[in-house]
Image 1 (spheres, helix red, strand yellow):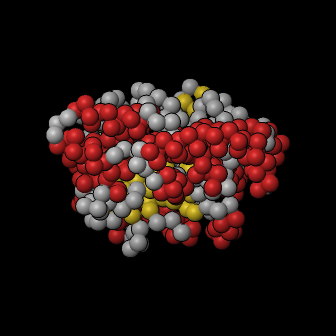
Image 2 (cartoon, protein in one colour):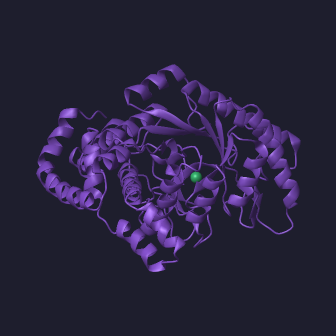
Image 3 (spheres, helix red, strand yellow):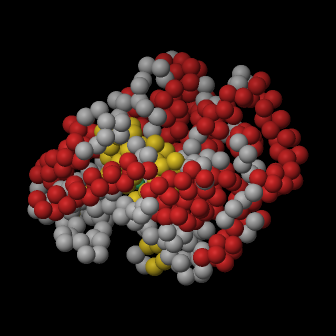
Length: 427
Ligand SMILES: [Mn+2]
């Protein structure tokens, strides 16, 4: 699927008059309010959100899966799909691979293809939550935390193998998410399981290249329903602290119990310089993996407010986290859903950039609760869509990515190319 610059220009020409009017209005308003709009556009342009290779096909639940056709059949086609997203929005310039779903048979050719699509390789992800065909040992009762040494060794070897593939492609981090845990009380010794996990991670960490990061993801339940070994940010942070300065926690928005104050977790991890990555999605109940910003946009904004303040604060030294979408698409076209998610992330980011941090801090020091809320909500209630669109326009993207995806009938073309019955690897 190739989108030509002329097609994007044609699309933008039709929308530009209205966009200019909207942008002019917002630019005047923001300038009056003391903002440097050129600086805002520059920052929004620079934000890149990685797309996971497993989110390009239709997701499913344990009850069923309803594929929409034209799904990528291999890694090359997955790169092609992300290239299409990136051409439309200019903010999806990175791909995150899951091994063994995406083992590159010819790394050189894969690298060239990614380069042609203007993509880089973000974190590589290991998979010790599923047994693969011909696998001698089963992960049924765990992987890095397993009671049997042979299975722990197999899991460690797999993670080291994932690092090797990542090195061939220029990745700089390994994300570890474990399904290890229990379904019933009494099934496992909590402390022993945690210590076995730590020891296994130490072996992987020893094989981590010096310029790499290890990102440790946590999750309170599922697929195990009574306990998980790395259940919360505390467990993840404990492991990262014991491992060393190249190990970090990774926050997935959906990996919290309902109503958890995720922005507070973000603030503290940044304070400790230990926030390594972020997985965006949205949820109503649990790990629902819905479109970013579709359920709780205010929470997303509050999280971004902490991210922006924490990363721009000169007194703190957290490295810029790896941004990635981690969502599933059960009823929407996966590519349209991803375009919506990236847009929601950019809108939340742009709004967070409007928060007047000095005034907010002053209000907090004076316990002026009303002022603090006014400052946050003034930013949240600003319609920043013309600002985000302007950033995209200046990056040669489409003014309306979803609209253009439909105008070009991209899904229909992919179905013609790949067929109706293709099934992508992933969740
Ligand atoms: Mn995740």
